Image 1 (cartoon, helix red, strand yellow):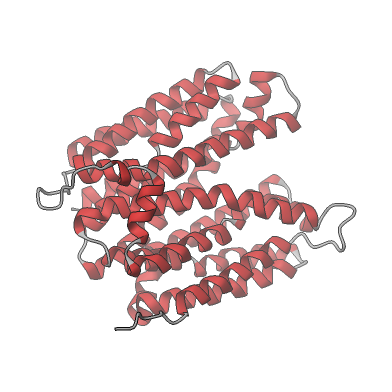
Image 2 (tube, rainbow, N blue to C red):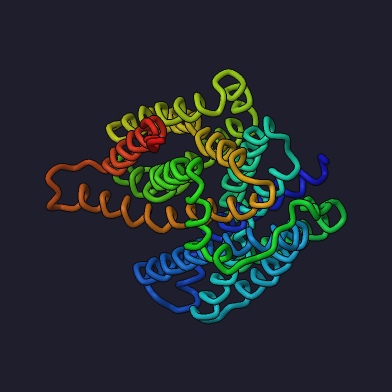
Length: 400
């Protein structure tokens, strides 16, 4: 059991780390391939990020439904195999279009977070799910910390080195999983695939048809849009407000990742035990509202740096909401549910950067009504209040 959990969590770490691993070298790589200025490289970088998120949106339900039909084990192993080959292609790519195609395939193959959550749900008792979902959040946080750190270090040996490292990590974990990962889908929980459940829109409609899942699904999406403010504008915000260097920005993100891993990997168990799923959601929304207000108006860099890891104390909403939804879903539909949630998260990844960077631009350009680089955090604060309303608003009951 421990080895199985270790493999699943390592897969999530590699998915998370594989993204961050290549970020430090991406600007230099794009300029190297196309001999273009940094401004144009940024446009291509944005396109690569967008296509990855779009593929995650469309293929997460497909991967989740496939895992419900054929099992978690083959999906996870095949995904790691494809990712290892894909990183090798990116390592030798000499044109933008090869890089773009490889990133498209990576977005499809890395849409396995839904399968990882479903495998955890298969292996967990109802009262264990929230805490174990928190372990996946912790694994993501660890990858978020290790990826940029290792990528920056390997980048000193060339722009291609991080891709070879990512390929090796995926291949090693695939071999490990081949020996330790059992199949968690049984004949009783195996479910036939249907077209309506293997596309994000049909899967969304099917999940939303369950009244117990509609509100949590809406809350999950809005929360993800709000929380993605950190990766969307943090580097821009800290540069404009405090004049931080790249090293300082990286250190602050690392501190946030470490704190998030601690919260979701351990502290959440205490919070859940004291507050329960519902109380944990309410606490997380209130804390995030407070944190966003502080970040919107803080003007001292030292205060912001010290406060950054504490913002992770609010990162308990997602595991609690996932637990609530998982308990309201049949055992043979866990993969579908997690696929829908992964698509909702990918959609938020598409929407949030567009929203947050636009607000940042408006309040930092020369013609801005007033200079407020922290304005995107006020947007996130408002979205937290919307989440609170969605979660606590009374449910209308149909007349008998």
